[in-house]
Image (cartoon, rainbow, N blue to C red):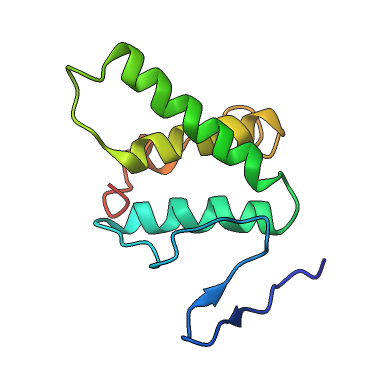
Amino acid sequence: MSASADLTYDESGRVRFHDSCVTDANQPQFEEEWQRRAFGLAVALSEFGHYRWDEFQGGLIRAIGEWEATAGNTMSWEYYDHWVEALVRVVNDHGLLDDGYVGPRDREDDHEGR
């Protein structure tokens, strides 16, 4: 696969992802910039072959299930928090980051990404 991917579009002008990537047909909407970046990173890493999309989906299902089982009645629902949890797991499972990496939400100087 090349270092940069060419985007393809369907008849309505929406981005067409790889067949293995089952995304929201209405195109996702984001309340925060970090949510858009997390979504894009998860899709891009899969598209470039670092993991299968169904692997990420399974992690997202597990993250949501764990939330439902432990905190579902006491904590507010934040979909992209579960998305990021699943992304962190699949990235760690595949060794895509060096040990000791500090995520954007953990950096004191990163106020834009919060």
